[in-house]
Length: 397
View: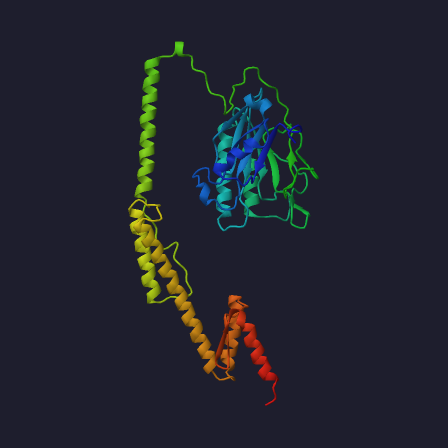
């Protein structure tokens, strides 16, 4: 598709902030600007869940000097300015689905942001907004509040769009709704088109195409992210340069100190990761307390990693004792259940159905031991126990 298009507006790339560089690795001749769901507050790479959301605008590097990324909008809105004879603001947007209770609030907030961006640039630039709006504004039977809000936004900002057929494909492979649009301020633009059956499209959305006629300017500002300005030292006022650098160093130092203080002073929240056990007694509680105390002492002493260190040995020992107490309690309960069965009345239906319910709930289809006439068979000998039991049943009484 690189040879067919100059600019791509992408929604739901499913990358987190630390992974956004992967977009620049798609092709050597592709550049871009993007946002992830965590771009405002990047999460650690070691705690990333399954990817979701995200917006991006990619373009052919041949027109790199005519593209200027701008920071307006949240992580659902990516903007760039097209620096041509007729400047234009291009926006890739991904509005929320209806799957959450706060989706309408987020939807309205995104519409407000789009309105502010349009008002900011409409005096100097053409406006082109493309993306997944997650709302069908063409279907007449749809009277949702989201549709009304989106149509009011179009009217207030004097934007237009066109009907091109369903763009969303359900799990059965049927085209069911038109939720992807180009909204633009230039009424003379050719209508957008739906691209069906494209060989490289694996999305559940049909791509849509909009053609914009523009002319390159001779003195377009180079805005490549990789290009660094060249300093003309012979014309530089060195004292001013030194003062500015010193102030910036102090400012960034204070920022780092503030961030570190916030991290250090942040109080730990307890209770979110409580240990969940189906069994409990005083011995298990005491063993867990001793294990936590040993872990705290080990952590407070710099987390030594030498396996022969006394604190490491103590930590492992208390953990071993804790697990042993759990196993002991499990074994005790199994023996109690077995004794209950042995000494219970064979006609006790309540106990019988209780055992069936328990067996179905835990999904366990195996037995650890079998008692036949006072003799206990375990593990590989359980089959011998069954053989003995059924052999006696076969003998007439």
